[in-house]
Image 1 (cartoon, rainbow, N blue to C red):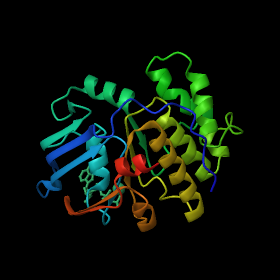
Image 2: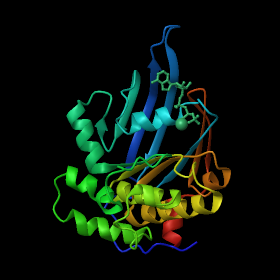
Image 3: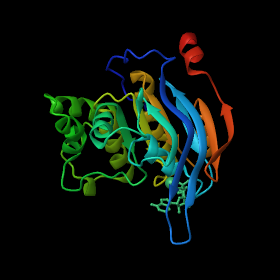
Length: 251
Ligand SMILES: Nc1ncnc2c1ncn2[C@@H]1O[C@H](COP(=O)(O)OP(=O)(O)OP(=O)(O)O)[C@@H](O)[C@H]1O
Ligand SMILES: [Mg+2]
């Protein structure tokens, strides 16, 4: 696997900064058979610079957790603070602004805009944020993920691994302080998945962002700093693999 070059400066966030704080987080959906409790009291804190794996069986609530932390779903109870903003009480405008400014999201199925080139897809968050110089930043980010030679390709003429690297570049281009990834390697073969994960880890380490990554892949989970196992909407196990702050201090 080749390491992407990390040319942009680390963010000023201190490693001890709490980026995500969940307290007794609950999420239910109404259904004809009554309420379905999907998240049933989740407590979790994620610090800047940390890479946290979320694992658990199908239907345990992992994607729902990502949706709530990303401000895409409103919890039915408890609190979800992202970079100091209480999302449970924030209005749609505040949530959208936080998402655009500070959060990057990568999905299993890439979710690229089919009619746009790789470059346009990556530049999109900057265009939406009304930032100048989006194209140059998007080009730099595509080179970062090893796709400098595929900038004008549309998603349909990119491989799965390439499409996911475009999605990773898009998630990181605006300098997010939190990146959420829901089974980002789930559609990829092992080798390609490892490459995509390695690109994500490298961008996360270089930027000082926090990364929360849902995965079914044991080896990928063990490569993270901490593993949080979910079952039936609750955290059932937490395991620290390494302390990123201490690891950083050792170099
Ligand atoms: N919009 C919805 N309305 C009703 N129930 C939902 C909705 N979205 C999810 N659920 C239910 O919530 C539960 C958790 O779903 P979720 O997608 O979070 O699971 P998951 O852990 O991501 O599973 P997988 O590993 O299969 O992706 C499931 O039982 C699902 O059926
Ligand atoms: Mg899921």
